[in-house]
Image 1 (cartoon, rainbow, N blue to C red):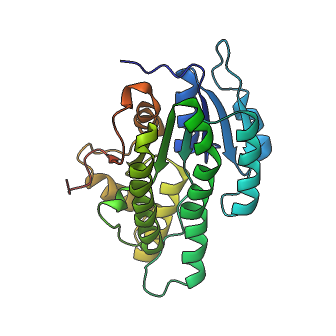
Image 2: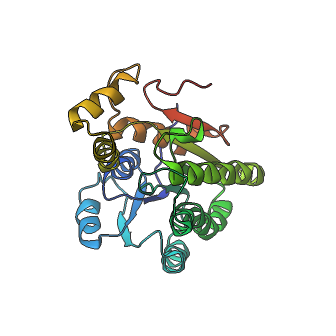
Length: 261
């Protein structure tokens, strides 16, 4: 099985922690040069220096806010002009928890800009280089809410579905060019995001954090949360030459929690 990413350049978003950071490490271990993208420049500089390095690899970083799509576009276009990107991992923290009814219009607009619009801007910046290279992989880290809307995540549910529909359409359009577009759908994963969800549930229900955690784990057949590295492994596979005939899919990495097919 060909998992070798030597000579490939990957841009990984949300790479300062959690699934994004684990993905950057996984891609670097397979030989890719990785550019980390997140908001905290000092943190990114430190993490880039810790990534695995073999002959020919050169890692870097871009400090950018996914919500500021104008600045994001400019920085990534400049990067792609100097070092074409063959692998794009779209990944950004989810919108704040809360019901959909009563949510402010501004909350939807902010979430769509941070996720849907940002993904679109990034793809527009890097796809021309993928076409020239004859190799392209776009992986969007979304959520299992694409298959089953999650209670208490109203704005997130709506936004994730929009991203999934965008990705499926893009996959069809780019397939003739040999560029694949896929979605990875994490379930409950040991990241700061899950801590936010637990805190919100505890505040709303009056239960302790421990009780909320136990109830969430009980819904997962594997009886535990995922480690970021487990989700990153699925992403890395979809970025590899071995996944050349897989495109337009939603891949849950959730320990069996999602009940739908």
